[in-house]
Image (cartoon, rainbow, N blue to C red; front, side, top):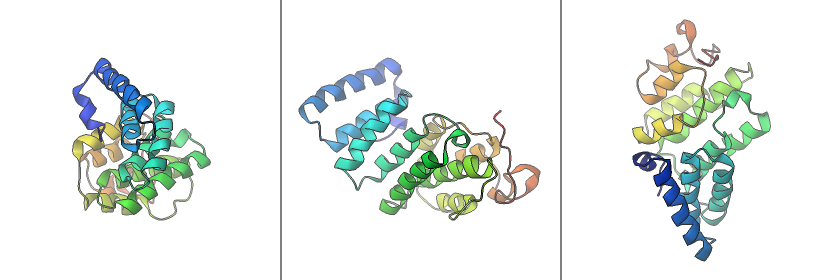
Length: 197
């Protein structure tokens, strides 16, 4: 199992059966990074963020060249919350893992989209300075990369955002980056819609 979108076919009980299966396999192969990753994806899908974090920590230790594992680790570290509500140290850790994913594989749009969403909601919505790469640069980069729309939609289920225009843009249903923020101004010039709706 390599994606959250795959688990969309199953209800909680079905995903739970996968968890049970992977637990059994991990008893025999506790250092198998791919099994740890699959287990983490199941936990992430179920919203069991602390267990997902533990699984992805083991995964990146065992398979340090797996870009998706760093991405999933970053997503789990958000714990289903608004980035705006996390601490700077927590956000820096999320950004570190997203940067690692991009350094390993710079062809996946979801890495850039998640980083743009995190930067917007934490830095922009808290009135903080955004250091490069900017939100617009990340969105522009994402648009030129391979896209797994179903995986991007699943990602959005695990991150609460205040700016629905930006969420729609990431989903593919919004306008341009430059008109995404309120008042038609650039994302870099405006706090946009930072209130949760």
